[in-house]
Length: 432
Ligand code: PMP
Ligand code: GLU
Image 1 (cartoon, protein in one colour):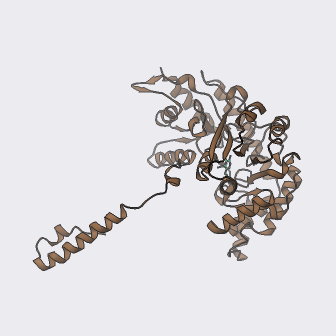
Image 2: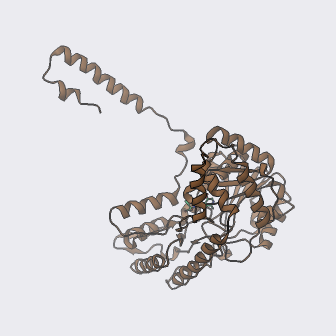
Image 3: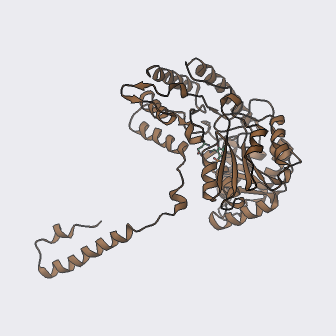
């Protein structure tokens, strides 16, 4: 700790004062150097994850004693199943404590390849699979490996908060293609065709979707593929992290379309399906060139994902899948509950999400209304109002590049859902 030299030495000799004066100057100089730290434009221009920020805000309010219900962050509220936790404990005892291969243990990559073959009917060699620190890092690795500065990346919106930021990191150009509630938040082949230019290099498709829960049917995906097959230099990232939280009874991976399969990068992982968000294991299954590029990148900045978490993920993929189905059923029941309660609230428009655990109601009818002297101008104001007045944390649609909406994550107990929807209804009623 730096003492104040003026205060400490006002009673001592001139000589000592001189020494301390020099010390003081050094202190000033050190402070001066500290203030010269530069933060890169790359990071300065990046927005922090608003889903995580809102969740943190809600935790802070809770710590202050405010009874907040957190519908902001998207993560299952279930504990990781026991057999997966046992595998991790065993991995610790068996000394899986060393660096692993950069792309992950071969046994895990084989288990993932087998799972993709058996569940999705897609064929990837283990060499085409690179495991990363969560689907988020796996996806970011892929974006950084594919996108050059100035390349255009098509992102149907609303879109998960991180896509546009990852493209910004890669110095690419985001081309947003909006799809509102009137089209069930799914883009059409015509919209896609219109967005493509000679600079388009990548499209990121998320189904089941965060933040809307919409699921593209096989026929709808075929429509998009029919456009994309004409543009062989566009790579397709298929974010399928919510594939197992699907209420339609069928799931089609973009990797199954032969016209484009050789340029589809599938992103998936254990976070959502196996309630393992904190373990940080996700992967890409990709054309070999992309897998190699991603491995090279990963070798320089993370080396490998956690050895213990990899062993846990292996148990997830090779063990009983009963837990996945149990959680899926719980999410479906909660989906029905949240939709029925939301439909009772005047002037908000809802669709029926077919997967994931989000509801994305249109709330723009409340814009321009006021509570006291506070006017609700937009969805960010509304999300803040719901937090402050209703003590319910949600995320503004703007964070997902589609203003006019808010996102509710219903990955929480039935009681929390009921109480949160009651509070939202009450808070909205107060707006005049
Ligand atoms: N994609 C989407 C659409 C997500 O919602 C998430 C969850 N944050 C991820 C990827 C990343 O998942 P993970 O927790 O495995 O990094
Ligand atoms: N996917 C989750 C969400 O959208 C986790 C938060 C995040 O990774 O941004 O809330």
